[in-house]
Length: 61
Image 1 (spheres, helix red, strand yellow):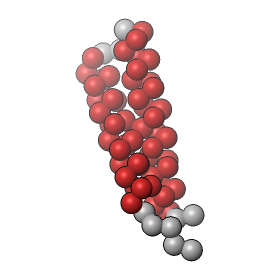
Image 2 (image 1 turned 135 degrees about the vertical axis):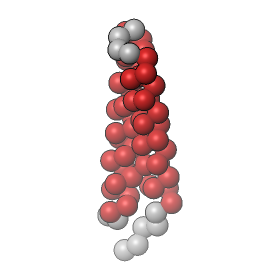
Image 3 (image 1 turned 180 degrees about the vertical axis):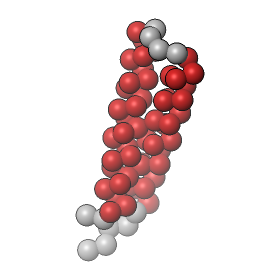
Image 4 (image 1 turned 90 degrees about the vertical axis):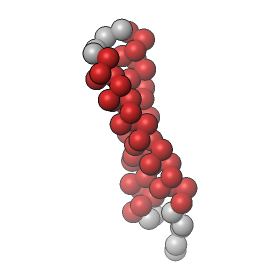
């Protein structure tokens, strides 16, 4: 498996975990608004970066 694809999968999973965490914080009304915004934005960046790495990396055997 390609290293870029593996790193992309890890970034995607981290982005999903961060988005779930942010959603839970919003639903529970806990935490500061600025913290939720920062964690949400970083999670979105991780998620879309990981997806693009997985999609654009060619599988070379």
